[in-house]
Image (cartoon, rainbow, N blue to C red):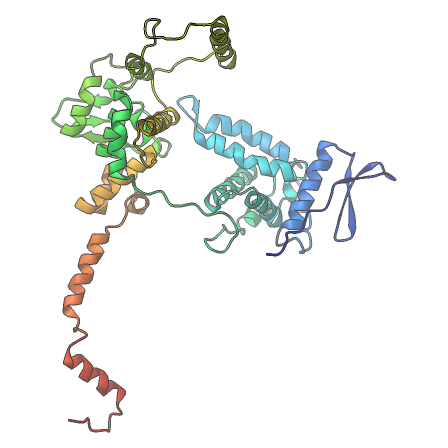
Length: 440
């Protein structure tokens, strides 16, 4: 395997008293030695050198009158002020804001002090190659590149940069499967039904109820953790649950989840509370765990308690308070704590001698979609999942392999069997010349 070339070194130019890097026998002076600006220029030059298009001539800076001349850092600062107010739901920042912040980091590291109007397709490819070298997956890289384009599109709308910059960045295509060195990830599939049933005895009743509800309704994890009695219409035989917040609320979509008899039986132990209280409370789950925790008393202890042990206990309690001084238990789960509670069930089952394959709450939605598509078709799966288009549902619902096998069997009955004499005769006639009389 060929050895990868090491990048050019960052060093001090004593005669000029500045930082310098030599690339292709040419010195590039970076500014004051060990300064932030010099390290940024060095990272940008190395990224351009490692990129496949580094041997191309640099793009000519765009000189357009009538526009301000901000740097990339100044443009990102303006966009961040806009994003903090735009990507919110009910006053709470959404996950998209954190994803935008992650997309900004390589852009700031490589081109933060350069002019935004000089950022072109080759620079975007250098940022993309920097993400590939950081071992990010191909899908994550494509999403972050699209977010960078979105930032420049917003800057064009605010007349911070000329429109030609965004149009030029649109020419950079996404990474394709099998045609890049970026890491590939396995697609998310349905959760194994046996693994789902096996973990339920090892989790609190609140977590078990949420798992069963997802299996029955196909809700998202973020929709099941925020269920309240006021959001459920119990006036008919089929209850209707309308989440106050959901993923596609900003698009104007309406999310309705019907709850059948099995889902109602799961919810009945938790609906006897105030209208605005959350159904699944982590404090109740913690109390349930403490009741079943084995109690160690002085009567069943065989060794005496030494003073050093008491001091160690106090030190651990003090360290816990200092590490999390403002720790407050919420009155509801979020998607992260819900997933961790399920993972705690895997650990508890392993201690008990049962090894369960790991799965995530999002896979339960895939399982329900696959089940509904198999029994009722793709349109029913689209309605259950609450998708506006059926092509989105196909991402969650696996295709029915048994249906394809049945079609293959029916097609095989019409075809001529291979061991049939007529098949051999027709094949021999095709091989012979048409003017030749076949043998008898």
